[in-house]
Image 1 (cartoon, rainbow, N blue to C red):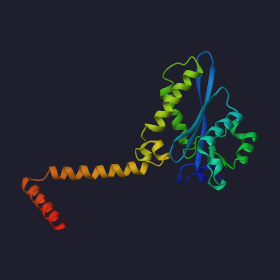
Image 2 (cartoon, rainbow, N blue to C red):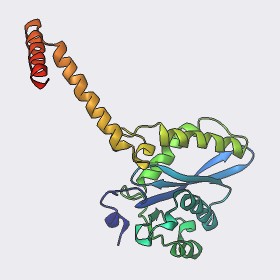
Image 3 (cartoon, one colour):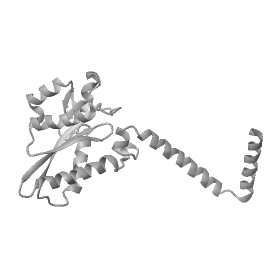
Image 4 (cartoon, rainbow, N blue to C red):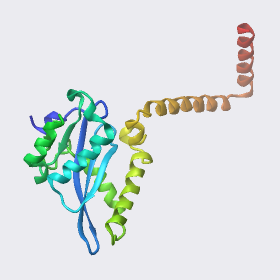
Length: 220
């Protein structure tokens, strides 16, 4: 089944689908470094990331070890474990990675290159991050790691997404989004009612006050 068919419908919960990909940065005097990330498709939350000097199947395994360790998905039934979505890079085509995923009960789908329904979310994340992180030069890998860590914390916890009803990835990942949306709705209605009261003429306002007093007496 093609990735475009398999992922036509959006995910319904966290850890249903993980997207993973690499992007690259240059460290002055050190050469190219490769950032591997694992993104939860439903919440857009960055579960795990690591900076590597290479981009091998072993690096993918190390990155996935971080994601599995942080989420504990190895302790749930295989049928509920996340599917992994990647591109067709050599590190994702290796038998070494296939064996690793099979051992952990994680299904693997490789998406069509440039297809908007496949790795679009993690590609947009990497693009947004590079637009900020690449604004300065880095002379040590540790400096680059610090800036990546800062951006990912901001992205997960402070950056509101219109596609998530203007909450953060962390709000969705940790199931806080419904409570936040309910509070917003309550505040919206309170504000609308207050505006209605403020726009009442003195006579209508007095009538409303009298009605409230009458109802209060009946209840008491």
